[in-house]
Image (cartoon, rainbow, N blue to C red):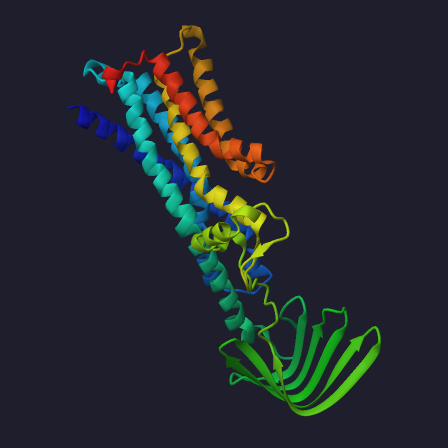
Length: 376
């Protein structure tokens, strides 16, 4: 009988969690999707690219909301049980309050596991996949950006004008202007050219033209009969290097293991092509691994609602205080990584804080529920 009662409680918590988390994720996704419309309006991508790119951001949104959705689910479900007197079913069947709280405590480990899976595997993979997809789409979309008798702004550094352009990639009357790193400009004029796709992107194979380099020191002209203009190094409104949040967790863990003594170094970088500061790597691993532990704390905070306030008139305030405490812990979990790079004492405190809070809340609940060893 007790197993059936606890199974129903677990089912109610899980159902509310799924509905609330999906609803909040959808709202945030729509708002974020509006902010990402410049992929279509400014960068010229199709709505298919835009939709795929935004869909791949859903795991990241969901991952950030898991901790709040879980706390909200526990708080609402347990309050509903109390208000509808469903909680009495547990006490009538001889279930002690500490046993009830132990069950909530154990359930929280399932959500910690889900959070870890998203933080360590799913989110980095989907974030990296979305950037790779956008980058490849930018390159594939390049031929469509070039229009006849119009200046086409291909990227922040590149403008192209052609007199004629056919579907086979043959161009006539070509004018290319590229901004150089030294604040100069490179201008290429060619009578004819061909757009060729390679494994690394597109190149212009140009015929009968002139290259003009303009910088502070003056002009440099060079005539050519045939030359190639490489486009693979041009930034087509997309990043080539990945961000820290897109890096594989195994790579970051290996970096930390290799440079453990220099984990707070603000100059040391780890990685070759995609390199990151060790200080940032340390903070990222903390966010992925340590933050989910706060879910266990929130399960204990939510469980406080079954311990009635001694003063009936203050019962609503008591519940509000519990909700405010849980919300404060969520904020602490989001900001705690910022202090791990201070002195060693603060770092140790930050790393041990989740465990300290779990122990404190558990002992407090045990005391309030008249805990006895025989109840376990």
